Length: 463
Image 1 (cartoon, rainbow, N blue to C red):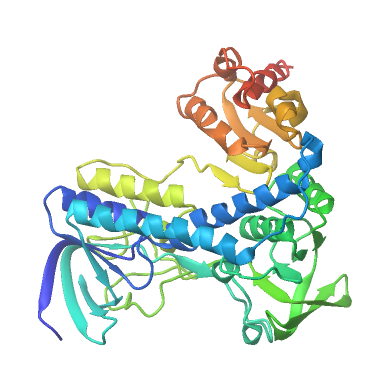
Image 2 (cartoon, helix red, strand yellow; image 1 turned 180 degrees about the vertical axis):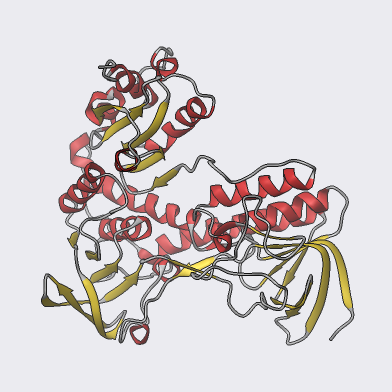
C-alpha cells in the first residue's frame, strides 16, 4: 500500500452532492478532494439532465420547423443533421466541464481521477488511469457514486448491446425504428425527441399505462400526446427474449395477454429504471450496509452505518433527481455546522421534459385517495391560460388539490413551460399559505403564470 495522504473530507464520486460539499469544505480552508472515475461534475452535466434537455430543445426546434405553416412561415428543404445536433450538445458539455474545473481551482479542492474503493474504514485506495495507486484517508467521507441504467437479465438483452440514455444522446444517425423499453421519464423524453428528429418510435411498457405512477388523467394525456405525434406504444407487455443487435436489427419477443408478439426495430433503448453504483467499492470492509436493492443504508440525516461516513444522492436511495441530490448536500453542510436537518417530509418537485412539460409537487389524487386525505380539486384546460393561445401551445391542463383548511396539498401541470410554475406553488405549500394567497395576486398578463388565477378561482367551495 502506498503512503496514505490525509484529507479532512473526501467524496467518492463527483455528482451534484459530492462536488458541492467538497467545494464548500475546501473553500472554508480545510483539505478536501473528489475521487471520480469518469465524469467531471458527475452525470448531470455530462450524460444526463443537461445534455438530454439540450437534445429535447433541438427536437422542439425541429417540431417548430414542421409547424411553420401554422404561423404563416414556409421553409422548404430543411433537414435534421444528427452529427450537428450531437456536436451542439457536446459543445454545451465542454463548457460545463470547464466551469466545473474552474470551481475546483477556485475552491482549492483536489480532483483525483481514478476508481476508489475502501481498503479499511475511512481509507480509500484509488486506481489511477496510468496504472498506479494512491491511498487516501479522511476524517469524513461522502459517498456520491450515483446510479446507472438497469439492464434486466432478459435472455438476449445484454447481447443485443442496447442503448441507454448515454448512447442515445450520442447518436449520429436517426434510427429507422427505435424500440424503447420503458414508459417512464427517460423513455418518454427520448422517444419524443428522436421521433421529432424523424425516427419511427415504439414504446413498450410493462404496466397498463405510460407513467403508471401518475394519476390516470396524466397517463391519458401523455398517451394522447404520443398518439398525436405518431409514437406507438404497447402496454401490459413483458419482454421475454431479445435477438439481434441494436443499431442493426433487433427483435423483441413480447408476452401480452397470454399471447406472443414479435416486434422488430433498428435500435433498442432501455429505460426501465436505475441501479445504484455500490458494487465493488469495499463497503463491507468499511462497515457500510446496503439495502436489499443495493442502495446504501442511511438515516434521515444521510448517515451510513459507519461513523463519519455519509451517502448522498442516487446511491443512498434519495429520489433520483439532481435537485434532490443538491438538497442532500445542503442537509450535510448544515449538519456539519451544528444543524439538525433531515430528509423527512421534504418537498420533492419533479418535471418531465416532454413537450409540453409535466410538472408536479405534493400529493397526487391517487395518493390522497389511498391515504383517505380529503381534498377539493381544481382543474382547468391549458387553453384557459391565454398565453398558451398566443403560442399555439394549448395542449394540457393545470390541476391543484386543496385541503379543507385551504392549504395546497398538490399541484400537477401538463402544459407549455409547466415546470416554471412550481416555485410559487412550492413556496405557498412550504409556508402553509392558503391557495387564495396565489389566487389574489396580480399576475402579469399575458404569461403562463397568469394561469394560476383561473386555476385557483376554480376551487370548489367547501361542501
